[in-house]
Length: 406
Image 1 (spheres, helix red, strand yellow):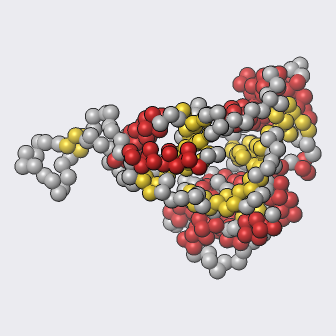
Image 2 (image 1 turned 45 degrees about the horizontal axis):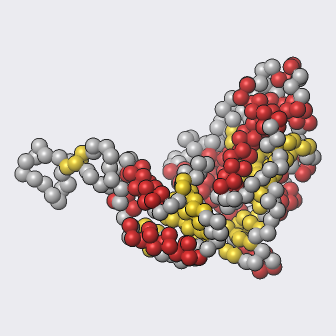
Image 3 (image 1 turned 90 degrees about the horizontal axis):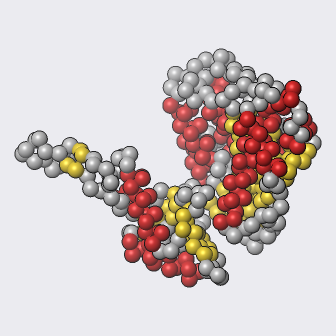
């Protein structure tokens, strides 16, 4: 569903005044206009709109998710219905068509809305279905991005970044007009919604957003050439997965050339389907690789707790501990053995959150060989063979031919 004139539906709670519009000017120039309704460009407009829509949805019998405030849930003994909001786009899904229809009717009584039918395109995400599952990809978005960079005829590449490339803030000539660089990098960030395999390389080039150099722009063009050749690839979600939750984590200790900061990477799977991932550079320098690994575990533990709670709201109750795979034996042992004083006395107390989650049975840690570490694609440039291997593990497929093959 798409709502028309979105921000004009809300009511302003604050006193906001504006000058008289040019087309409506009173002779008394001392007068100003007080806004009763929000207008586009007003910083209070999104909050006022969401508050109004929230009240309407709650009146219909929905409850707001405690773990994702843009999602609303309505459940009965045999029915379950969800509403997901993204500004003026509404995604309604459930297990009963009549329930969905009733929600549409109720919302259309309150707002001017356009019914877009069964979802196939949602905020830039293209959705395809088969009996085996659902593909979510961004082919149109990727090709439009390539076209905006005028790379339609450029040669495609097999991997988004060459293996031994080291980008720095000190090597290369500055760009005379960095606007295009910033525009492309910002657009690539949204492409990672369905392309987790480029999350790390986009994370790297985003670090040079303020003062980009020519090598950085060349790296962006290479990512776009890769996106052009793999525009049809997207995430596959199996319709009959096991409901077992699992996670992988790793850290690239002092991997940044300029700051010696480490990079966190993790990914979470529901069955074989990738549902959460992240690649992020830390703000501080860790004194050892063990500290970096252990602190990453704390971040992942928080993500696991959040995912488990969110799944509970979907009616998926996970009672077993979630396995967390790591390739650092020392960090694993610290979790179950708090006696490593020499190696742990400098670690922040909040990082021991992972130990608490280990003790209360939320998760348990398992060792995985570095060659099988799924998160490598989120923290380093890899070879083509490794890249293809990890693409399969992340269930990143080319929809048109692999969807039909299933």
